[in-house]
Image 1 (cartoon, one colour):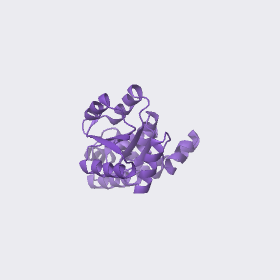
Image 2 (cartoon, helix red, strand yellow):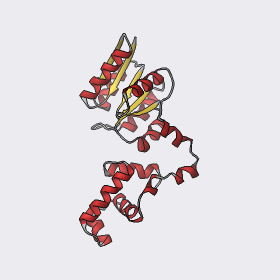
Image 3 (cartoon, rainbow, N blue to C red):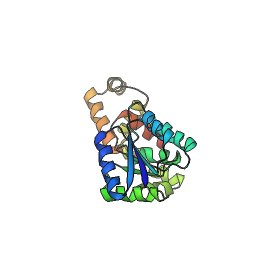
Image 4 (cartoon, rainbow, N blue to C red):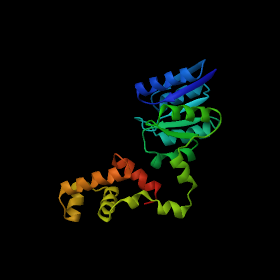
Length: 208
């Protein structure tokens, strides 16, 4: 009998994955945790064949949690299942011990493939991520996502990373706040991010 643990703060997501696992693996048991603390409580008393981990949960340092898993439960198979951008987070979680990374936007068949592969002691990453991991350092520099930005957008991105708000940037560059807001929206669109936290994480990934 297979035993699974879903760590996700959204009830609907947990319910959907639980149904999928019940369909794929009979008989099986699937338990649920809504944050890092409840996940550790489960792991303290149980062994799981596979853990599905979200990485954006309240009161949870998901990367720290993954690193803890690697130390305390070295044989634990963890598949990261998240809406967070793969290009920002995947490499770090794989380095921390995750066996795979898949987006919540992925087709159902791809999720099934990822679960099966990790459960069978394999690894799962997307084709795009595999290509990125195979790149040399020089190729990664050439492929730097920040190269998509115009000179002005890159300047504003750096000011945002320095902690300046829109008004402060507008004063610095002698532009209207609305203009800075438009540039910010374009920066987020080009980098495929949604907030400043993701911009900071992306900057760290590309050593900006």
